[in-house]
Length: 149
Image (tube, rainbow, N blue to C red; front, side, top):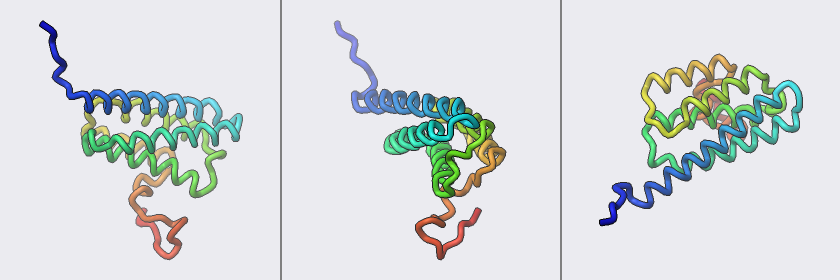
Protein backbone atom coordinates (compact mmCIF):
# COMPACT_ATOMS: atom_id res chain seq x y z
CA UNK A 1 0.00 0.00 0.00
CA UNK A 2 1.34 3.43 -0.95
CA UNK A 3 1.86 5.84 1.94
CA UNK A 4 0.52 9.31 1.30
CA UNK A 5 2.26 12.45 2.48
CA UNK A 6 0.50 14.31 5.29
CA UNK A 7 1.70 17.63 3.87
CA UNK A 8 -0.70 19.17 1.35
CA UNK A 9 1.00 19.77 -2.01
CA UNK A 10 0.54 23.56 -1.84
CA UNK A 11 2.29 23.67 1.56
CA UNK A 12 5.18 21.57 0.30
CA UNK A 13 5.53 23.86 -2.73
CA UNK A 14 5.57 26.92 -0.47
CA UNK A 15 8.24 25.40 1.78
CA UNK A 16 10.34 24.51 -1.26
CA UNK A 17 9.96 28.05 -2.58
CA UNK A 18 10.86 29.43 0.85
CA UNK A 19 14.03 27.31 1.00
CA UNK A 20 14.98 28.29 -2.55
CA UNK A 21 14.61 32.04 -1.93
CA UNK A 22 16.32 31.76 1.46
CA UNK A 23 19.31 30.14 -0.24
CA UNK A 24 19.30 32.94 -2.85
CA UNK A 25 19.23 35.49 -0.02
CA UNK A 26 22.13 33.71 1.70
CA UNK A 27 24.17 33.74 -1.50
CA UNK A 28 23.48 37.44 -2.07
CA UNK A 29 24.39 38.31 1.54
CA UNK A 30 27.61 36.32 1.17
CA UNK A 31 28.36 38.25 -2.03
CA UNK A 32 27.77 41.51 -0.18
CA UNK A 33 30.18 40.53 2.56
CA UNK A 34 32.85 39.52 0.03
CA UNK A 35 32.49 42.75 -1.97
CA UNK A 36 32.27 45.19 0.96
CA UNK A 37 35.26 47.49 1.14
CA UNK A 38 36.65 46.14 -2.14
CA UNK A 39 34.23 46.37 -5.06
CA UNK A 40 31.41 48.95 -4.73
CA UNK A 41 29.71 47.90 -7.99
CA UNK A 42 29.63 44.22 -7.00
CA UNK A 43 28.38 45.24 -3.55
CA UNK A 44 25.50 47.17 -5.14
CA UNK A 45 24.62 44.24 -7.40
CA UNK A 46 24.68 41.74 -4.54
CA UNK A 47 22.55 44.08 -2.41
CA UNK A 48 20.04 44.32 -5.25
CA UNK A 49 19.99 40.52 -5.45
CA UNK A 50 19.31 40.35 -1.73
CA UNK A 51 16.51 42.90 -2.02
CA UNK A 52 14.92 40.76 -4.75
CA UNK A 53 15.23 37.55 -2.71
CA UNK A 54 13.74 39.25 0.35
CA UNK A 55 10.82 40.50 -1.77
CA UNK A 56 10.16 36.93 -2.91
CA UNK A 57 10.30 35.72 0.70
CA UNK A 58 7.80 38.46 1.57
CA UNK A 59 5.36 36.95 -0.92
CA UNK A 60 5.55 33.70 1.06
CA UNK A 61 5.15 35.30 4.50
CA UNK A 62 1.56 34.18 5.02
CA UNK A 63 2.85 30.68 5.79
CA UNK A 64 5.28 31.90 8.46
CA UNK A 65 4.99 32.94 12.10
CA UNK A 66 4.68 36.62 13.02
CA UNK A 67 8.22 36.80 14.48
CA UNK A 68 9.71 35.52 11.21
CA UNK A 69 7.60 38.02 9.27
CA UNK A 70 8.80 40.85 11.51
CA UNK A 71 12.44 39.77 11.16
CA UNK A 72 12.02 39.79 7.39
CA UNK A 73 10.44 43.23 7.57
CA UNK A 74 13.37 44.60 9.59
CA UNK A 75 15.86 43.05 7.16
CA UNK A 76 14.08 44.56 4.17
CA UNK A 77 14.00 47.87 6.01
CA UNK A 78 17.79 47.87 6.41
CA UNK A 79 18.37 47.18 2.73
CA UNK A 80 15.81 49.72 1.57
CA UNK A 81 17.20 52.30 3.99
CA UNK A 82 20.63 51.87 2.39
CA UNK A 83 19.14 52.26 -1.09
CA UNK A 84 17.02 55.28 -0.10
CA UNK A 85 20.04 57.02 1.41
CA UNK A 86 22.12 56.13 -1.68
CA UNK A 87 24.78 54.44 0.42
CA UNK A 88 24.60 50.84 -0.76
CA UNK A 89 28.10 51.04 -2.23
CA UNK A 90 29.36 52.36 1.13
CA UNK A 91 28.16 49.48 3.28
CA UNK A 92 31.02 48.32 5.48
CA UNK A 93 32.28 44.78 5.93
CA UNK A 94 30.84 44.83 9.48
CA UNK A 95 27.42 45.94 8.24
CA UNK A 96 27.43 43.27 5.54
CA UNK A 97 28.49 40.64 8.08
CA UNK A 98 25.54 41.65 10.29
CA UNK A 99 23.16 41.44 7.33
CA UNK A 100 24.53 38.02 6.39
CA UNK A 101 24.17 36.84 9.99
CA UNK A 102 20.53 37.90 10.07
CA UNK A 103 19.77 36.22 6.75
CA UNK A 104 21.55 32.98 7.64
CA UNK A 105 20.54 32.66 11.28
CA UNK A 106 17.11 34.26 11.46
CA UNK A 107 15.33 33.87 8.11
CA UNK A 108 15.54 30.10 7.81
CA UNK A 109 12.67 27.67 7.88
CA UNK A 110 12.48 27.17 11.65
CA UNK A 111 9.92 28.91 13.84
CA UNK A 112 11.19 32.15 15.39
CA UNK A 113 10.72 33.34 18.95
CA UNK A 114 10.51 36.79 20.46
CA UNK A 115 14.15 36.27 21.56
CA UNK A 116 15.13 35.80 17.89
CA UNK A 117 13.32 39.01 17.04
CA UNK A 118 15.06 40.92 19.85
CA UNK A 119 18.44 39.56 18.70
CA UNK A 120 17.75 40.86 15.19
CA UNK A 121 16.75 44.31 16.45
CA UNK A 122 20.06 44.46 18.37
CA UNK A 123 22.01 43.39 15.26
CA UNK A 124 20.24 45.99 13.12
CA UNK A 125 21.08 48.75 15.61
CA UNK A 126 24.71 47.60 15.98
CA UNK A 127 25.04 47.68 12.19
CA UNK A 128 24.07 51.36 12.24
CA UNK A 129 20.54 51.06 10.86
CA UNK A 130 17.19 52.17 12.25
CA UNK A 131 15.47 48.92 13.23
CA UNK A 132 12.11 50.66 12.95
CA UNK A 133 12.82 52.32 9.60
CA UNK A 134 10.65 49.78 7.81
CA UNK A 135 7.61 50.92 9.78
CA UNK A 136 8.44 54.62 10.22
CA UNK A 137 7.01 56.06 7.04
CA UNK A 138 8.71 56.82 3.76
CA UNK A 139 10.89 59.96 3.91
CA UNK A 140 11.93 59.53 0.26
CA UNK A 141 8.45 59.42 -1.28
CA UNK A 142 6.64 61.34 1.45
CA UNK A 143 9.00 64.15 2.56
CA UNK A 144 6.27 65.89 4.55
CA UNK A 145 6.08 63.04 7.04
CA UNK A 146 8.98 62.47 9.39
CA UNK A 147 10.02 58.97 10.39
CA UNK A 148 9.42 57.87 13.97
CA UNK A 149 12.79 56.15 14.41
